[in-house]
Length: 450
Image (cartoon, rainbow, N blue to C red):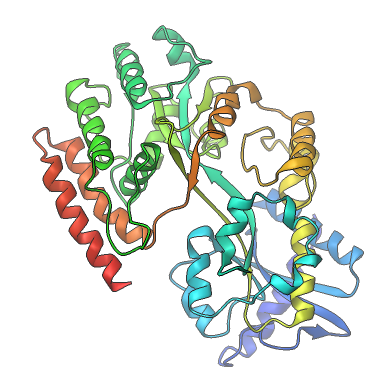
């Protein structure tokens, strides 16, 4: 492990501490020059507790600086990479790094509050830009101007247990692709007995609202109208989501008696071999294996049932409005090196990941298109150490789905929808029409205030 990155970060923090009352941020708001070099501060350096990722990150920063001796990268250890409690305050106070991490859902907000640099004139510095999926690039594009660069993306799918499928007489190579099929398969899996649950869903801590949204997208619906001013959940599609959950819970008894679950609950059940299916992104798979006791051979993922759409999320980097042209050019070159070179860098060096017993071969993130994607997939396949065939249904099915990001004011809306989801899973006589009417009114109030 190289310590240069650690030391550089420590020095930067030390200087900032001595100037803690200064109005400008540490390493931000100046001309970006230091000893004849262009200096950029970046965040989302993995914490020291994540020793392998930290070592990879620092190794890649050092390699970049060696290739670009005119650039000094000052990395800031941050976990989480974006803290919603401090994010806006750092932006408004000039404390944000020159190149900073931002979720897909926050890109438009950063632009709206005039805290993002316009990258459009500098895109020629980013060799990989045109190879990135357009639907991801568009997330950071506002009124024809580019304000950020995607780094990763995920989409929701149906994680399932192949062993339980076989025991229930189902084909583990053909996961359900409609909600009627999910319901039928869940019923067969639950019939195995012994505490086995066919299908589990979240209904607490805003996670129920998140999954309701994903399930609504899958049926072609939406949570908020195109103008962003009104809820659109009190619809046939919105009703179908809650009715399906209600019927699986109370008519089929395929969801078990324990409810108000969150993600860790479903992961524990799947890891112990007691759960047939739940919705998640592919990044759940290594968690199930390394932390929850599952085996890679048992865990597979199919496309989002419903056939209409799937919820996507992810992150990227934006640039502070005070950045100089030299800093923007340096930051774009850094992004190319770290994250956007197929088969290389912090996220794409699959040979290095395999050597350090990290999973290689998961179906996402899939950032590129065309030749860049082909190269990335080729290198990934050559170093795969997980059963990639278990993920082919997900890859094939995703090609038919509309990719949709989370709604505006997502967490507030999810909190409202939690109530509707938890009600149908805990009350047999829940009034779905009334739940949707009440939730729509509350969401309209949230949107009116934003």
